[in-house]
Every structure is written in C-alpha cells, then in structure tokens.
Length: 313
Image (cartoon, rainbow, N blue to C red):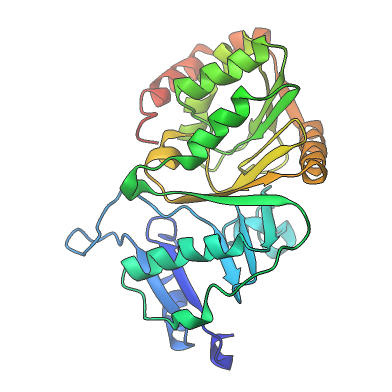
C-alpha cells in the first residue's frame, strides 16, 4: 500500500518486537512505511524506559474503520499448516464516530515520539453513526496515571445482576478487583473466569494460579482453555456490557502500559459475547477446589514465588 502512495504509519514496541528481524523493518522503510519504535532498548536514547510499553493492538483505515483487540501481527495466529500456533484471541472491527477517538490515541503517540509530520487536514472527518450500538474507546495513559479501563471494570462488576464472564490471558488482578468479583459472587451473580491452560509466559501463569483458591472458596468458577494459547482480553456482563481490547487484568496493564479497550453497550453484541464464552468453556477444563488443593507441593511453591513478583509482571 505504501508503494501505491497510501500513507502507512506504524508504531511498534521495542520489547514486544524484540524477536522481529531488523531486516523486516528495513524493508518496510524502503517500501515507504513510516516507523516509530516505542521506547527503544538503548539506555542513552531519548524516551528509554524498559517498564512502560505500548501494548495496544490497533489499526485505523482512512479515518473510517478501526480494529482493536488482543491480536498482534505474527505467526502465532496462523494455522499449523502455516507453521503457526493457532492462538485463540479476539479482535473487533469498529465503524462510526468512535473511530476518531482511536485515531487520536494513535496520533498522540505518533507526534510525541517523533513521528513524521502528517497532513492533519486528512484526519478526523465528520463520521455519521453506523447503527445504534453504543461504543466507547478507552485508553490507559501511563504518563498521566489515568486508569479509565480499570475504573470501568470496577463499575461494571459492581453493577452486575446476573452474570460476569471474563476471558483473560494474564490475570493477576489487584485485591480491589478480587474482592469486587467475590462480592458479586456472594450476591448470587454467576462469576466465571476463563484463563489459559497453555501460556506463552509460564511465570505469569503461576502467579495467576496462586489466586485460584481464594476465588474457588467464594463461588467464583475458573476454567482453563486447553486447545491453544489463550490470548484474548474480553468480558461480558448481563448481555448489556462488554469489553474487547488489549488490557489484561493485571498491574502492568492498569498502571504502566499503554492500552486501548472498546466498551460496547448493546444486547445483541453482549449475547454474541456470552455465546462465544460458553463455547470456549466447552473446550476448557473447570478447576475444582478439591483437585486444586491436591496439586503437588512444588507447584504451590512456584505459584507462591511467582506471585511475590506480581507488581513487576
């Protein structure tokens, strides 16, 4: 597309793309793609910061269409016949006025970190609503310690009446979210959490499993997805509130990373999300308290040890 004269701008995270060949980026530049490396891993370079990362996965096309969710661009999502790993993830296509917000999230960082000047007159056109679904885009901005995704999760959990279904790849919530979920379960809300049985980051998985006992003792049901690496970050509540995005339920997503989530208020979409969740748990194993208590002691030690580092994960 860049060779055809279409403006193509890409922000990539230095840590997230550490295994990507430099030759690929050189080729993209040669073909006319403008690139920004977010927080390069070079101590003397401007904006050096190992901890704060750009974890967003977003794309905006012609200021009219946006895509956000948990999916990276990588072979992990290709089928096995393409030497991929067939990861399970969720990404959504968005149209309508909210695309302007997502476009702003991209351009804000593009300019802040030295991106090439763009013709701003081409951006932010008047966009008419498409359908009657209410969609909001929220971005966690680490520089300002703003936590709209976190606060929205807490509010949605507190107002749940029937069910809360959460799918998350890296699940190490703080005690406020833990207590909110348990409080909802004690009120009779059906609280279920779907997590990976196979993780690309075992250290995080061990830390996450340390919390299982607390949840299981308080009627929160936990499942582990078995057929592939689960990388989705979604939630649906009472068929009327849903979120899809890049944010995990962990300290890093809420306090350090740049993240973007869509909040969708729509019964039809909520029903689809609920049905997908129930389909996923049919491919999962439910964790039961008695079986969890009988796990090997060495497994408990791994969980206890990894959970000590939860504020760094």
